[in-house]
Image (cartoon, rainbow, N blue to C red; front, side, top):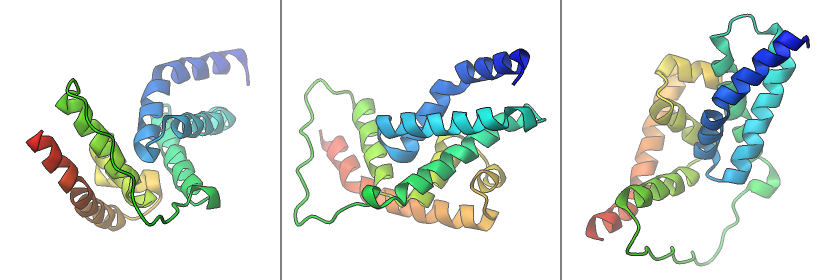
Length: 171
């Protein structure tokens, strides 16, 4: 890669790394995995930097790589959830915790419980603000799939968050 292209990549990386890392966290719910996913996306972008002609396509390429890496990683045998006879008690909220922090934690915990595809659709549609067509393009699927995954994901998220949100309201 020539020095000008290398500098352009560095500028893009510096401007987008935090946003990509936040998106990765929302996809997987773990900051360490989010760092790995973001790194995977940027390494893939670096490899293809010279072949990407349209600068507006950079975000879409990184987003698509991020989502695919997240879904692929969730399919790994060591990432599968293990069944337990009893669930651990959730940590007690300290009096000083703001509702916004508790709500964000509940949302991330709820997203973590969804299947990877539904999680990816919800993150891209509602947290990244993509429309149905852009989400379908990022995931490599049809728009109808995005709509159905969003509907199923929102229903599942509501049921998961129902008790958590009720706890927040009574606190």
